[in-house]
Image (cartoon, rainbow, N blue to C red; front, top):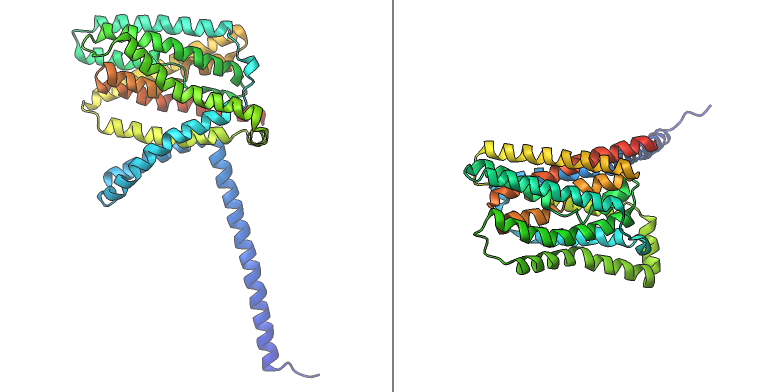
Length: 353
């Protein structure tokens, strides 16, 4: 029998090495693909906590690494531009799925607004009693910014994610915003008489801010439903698109909140007390909303409508009327409400599974 030549042996070895390389590459690609799938699944399941953690870490890295100062100066205006774009995109996608014929007032909305006004009155009373104690007054003014703020413009997004009715939630968000435009200019001059702004002027500013945030994407959503139906159908086939856009805006909001806390001109003890009080207010709102919703079989809508607040408006109120440190309460409220939102979404996912 003829023995294999050296060339034949070399070719066999090369062939074996080739197939081994191919198999190794395929196996590596498979492992990488599985890891990517797990990563994407993790990001989908924990979008809000990941967004908050990402915003916090990115800000702290830029704050404490001097080499990134120049990059921070370049990125800051870009982030300032991206934030309203993400908010607008979030609301536009959500409002494109709203049934405008179902945007009707409901009794539970009346009860939520009534309870909110009662809580505002109680908070104002406590703040006035504490007028001779600056630190205590500051704490309760920080809480008041969270109580009096309107329902968050993005509340329909999370409501839809939880299986609630985005139609009635959108209607409630609009009603809550109009009430806010009346109550804020009427109440805050009682606490801070030095505020150099009239009732009419403040109301118009609030309505202008809310119109840009709410009405423009709402009208565009209506237009797309009626005149750009292919785009509307595409967005309906991707129901979580608005939620992920909201996650991007939340990352920016969290970074700004951490920045305000780090730069706050007050003691750590005051910051901790403001954060703790805002957490108590957030949990109280959530419990009250769920209890009211239980009576109307609207637990999701009432819970979200009561506790999910437009903290951007609350921060503006603090800067316009109060000590800017009071805005820390609203900033911390962002974190608390989205921790609760994350838990609700996890609970909803577990029930569906």
